[in-house]
Image: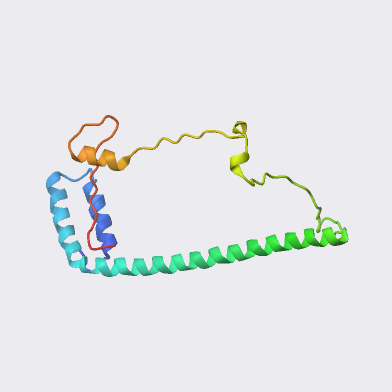
Length: 163
């Protein structure tokens, strides 16, 4: 095996070897032993590689924040422009010339403004019931050995030392 292969290339070969149906168990064990020893030589780079991914992730999050702010700014500009047209119309009762490139009309819509909820009659209220699983209690009871129908205790491995 070449020592110039990346960590991901070696990990990919390990995954493929584990499911290779043309190899015997002995051949799979032999190849996995070689691949794992090659991988161990590269493992000190895992933390560095993870760190570079973390830097890229932070940069992407900052870019997303900038894009979100730019979108909010554009939406605010649109809202202000609409309000300018409405305000101008309320003063002058005139709109810009109407044509296919400028199809502006003033429309009226209605909505409810709640002033004091306590004064609203009961007929206008609806009851909402939310039913939610208490996963913390389920986990606690499953760890205590209690058998609960419909759920299993699931274990997940994770690398400690990487955020």
